[in-house]
Each structure stands twice: as C-alpha cells, then as structure tokens.
Length: 68
Image (cartoon, rainbow, N blue to C red):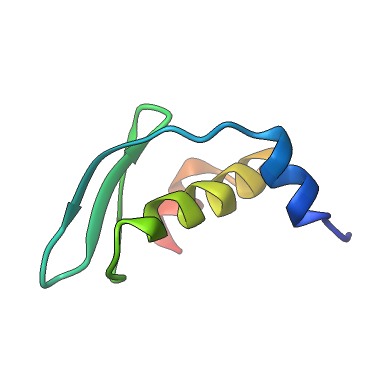
C-alpha cells in the first residue's frame, strides 16, 4: 500500500501538546495520549503525530504504536 504523505499532511490538522524536550528525548501529547520518543527537537512531535495518524488509520493498535 502506498501513501501520498504530502496529501495526508495537507488533509490533517495536528495539535501536539505538552511538548517537553529533555536529555532522554521528547515527551508530548497527541489526541489525548502521551508519547515518548528518544528524539530531540520540538518539531519531531509534529513529525511523529503524522506517523501516529497514519498508523491509526491503518488500524494499528495504540499499544503497538507506543511500543514502536
């Protein structure tokens, strides 16, 4: 299955909240769920929100998304 990521990004409106960057990485909230990623830079919250949205639209469970 192929995705047109540019079109998806244009269609979706992400609101990433509670962004905290520490030495360990990035904590943020998206659609009422809290996430952590060992990445730096607040912009990565929006990048990850796009990936999370694609995963959810592909019926990937919240548990698997958070494990990844």
